[in-house]
Amino acid sequence: MSDHQPPRRSPPEPPPGAYRTYPADYFPEPDGGGSGPVPRGSGGPGPAGARSPLLTARVLIALTVVVGQLWALPVAANAWLSGDTDTAWWTTAFSGACFLVVALIWRLAPERER
Image (tube, rainbow, N blue to C red; front, side, top):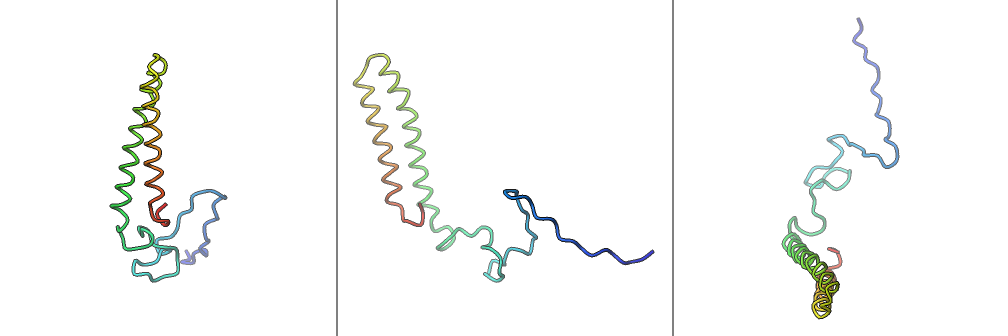
């Protein structure tokens, strides 16, 4: 028997849009060496985790507003259908104010975090 092995072939390219796997040594070391893409886990510009508290606060405010709008929609619809137009208009105004709060939060965010 011979110890001769056939030459290694590279795997075929995946079809367009398919998930591609990379060899373990493709990504550079965390110290910035190498010539591959940005290492996994890099949070973008700035020191790691610097954006996290502000981003978390904005997301929590936006989620709270969404919950408020989800409450206001059925209350407004129920009030409108039962003939209580005052309540319907107040809850509609509340929903509009919620939208403006989220739009303001988005507008005040730094350009790089939008």
